[in-house]
Length: 299
Ligand SMILES: [Zn+2]
Ligand SMILES: [Zn+2]
Image 1 (cartoon, rainbow, N blue to C red):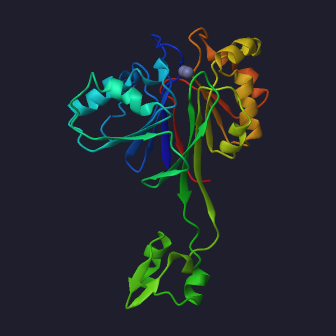
Image 2: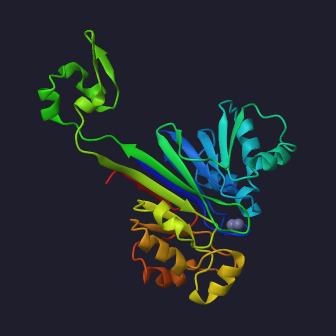
Image 3: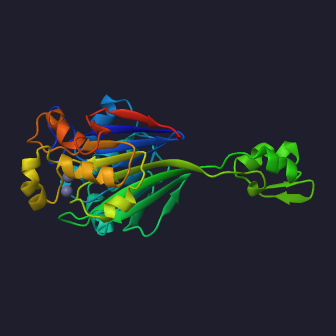
């Protein structure tokens, strides 16, 4: 099971009633934070999420609405006696950005590992993190999070392969076991493959074709919907963002289970009023709001 919390749902600048878009993924007692705009730690306090167990911070890009909260949060984590290292992932320019930022927070009691412009898939704890290049006004990364699920236990195979009962549960968990002088591998008791949980996080960008494959069959597709009205398409093209309709088209083509819209322009007071523009294209749309929470389970 994975829990997600939308800490904020705004784009551009923090508003009295809307924090900047940022999301927290909680899995096995540890946390991943995606983006950290100004006020993200305030949103975390309001929702009582805690700071201490954040292991990874994924940064989409270096526009202020996605990073201005980072020095404050790192400093608060230092003040809460954090000593375990933190990994920060981001696009090209991450090292330069962090160098500048560390000028104002030079003494942190924990190490920071930087992963700039990651290639391929990273495995962190039990989670696989992949990235893709988006089309925005500066280098920007989309993120994919996948937690695999072990295949089913195949009783028939376990018996046929004469596997001692005592080691069944270890093998079922995917561990290789040495028992009474013999080695046993998990595939001796495992059967049919099962799908894990996939979450995609795409902001800020134009709706490029590559996104469809990247988000394919996600359980949850979190996507920017900077503009709600179809009439704002020109603005979306000019500012390299998306309308609700464009985000919904990606969700439909990517055959995702649910679309969660976020990163609403500060000029849009009530994103709910534009819900229909997304729902006309993709029914399973959630209009995000600060504090929205969801638990994702294996299907
Ligand atoms: Zn933004
Ligand atoms: Zn941006």
